[in-house]
Amino acid sequence: MDKIADFITQIRNAGTARHEKVDVPASNVRAGIAKILVEEGYIRSFKVAKDSKQGIMRVYLKYDENGKHAVENITRASRPGRRLFVPVTKIPAVRSGLGLTIISTSQGIMSGKKAAQVGIGGELLCTVW
Image 1: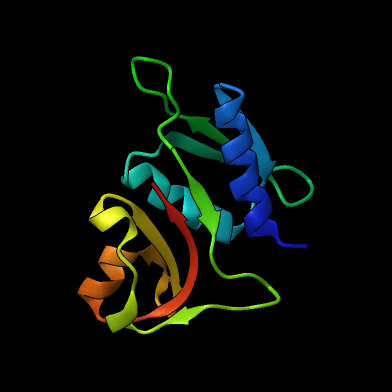
Image 2: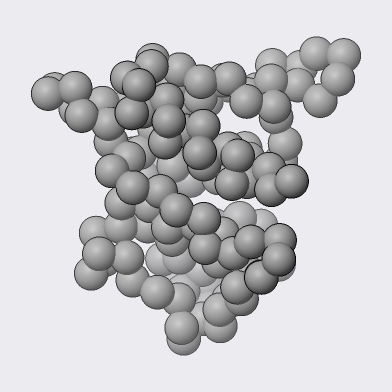
């Protein structure tokens, strides 16, 4: 089971259905992805609530003044069956730089722009625009 793909799909589906928020099981990888989406302006915010199990992460979605979801498209690049690693020189530009790549590096999860600035590559998790 691909937990990152499930998280991405839940955000995509909740945005299509015009929900204000979506609740997903919490994990450090999901929190790292959500942190980048907040920094880049694709979601409003997120909260992690502890419970007796692994916790729940509540993601608050963002819409423009016309009611259109801020995330136009979000796709999973690397999968458990086929991991996709990119060196720093091959980090893709999404929509000619208007989009976002999220990369899992040895220094944590970061956007493609930040990974290029730091000078490290990693596993290409997903692309957003």
